[in-house]
Image 1 (cartoon, rainbow, N blue to C red):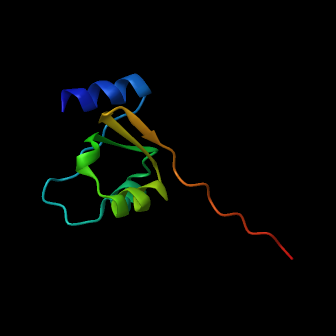
Image 2 (image 1 turned 30 degrees about the horizontal axis):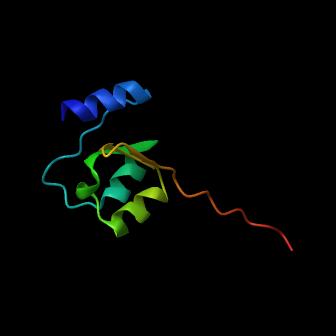
Image 3 (image 1 turned 30 degrees about the vertical axis):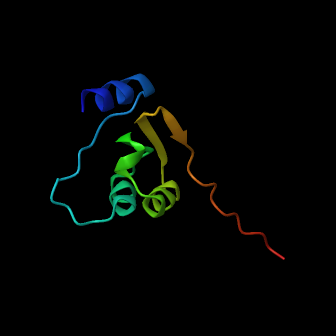
Length: 80
């Protein structure tokens, strides 16, 4: 977890740790916390469906390998 703390500090994020026993989906936790990013120790810690859901609300950063996934752009509504 020290690597997660270091990466958060390097990127300028404050860490918020969810309860280990939480059954709330990660994307919902990120949304409720108003998170700008979710930082994971590795790509093994987040499945592809969870990654997609989180990217709807926040950026995703992984420590090893060092990867960044930008949140999906918000859909804009165009008047016809």
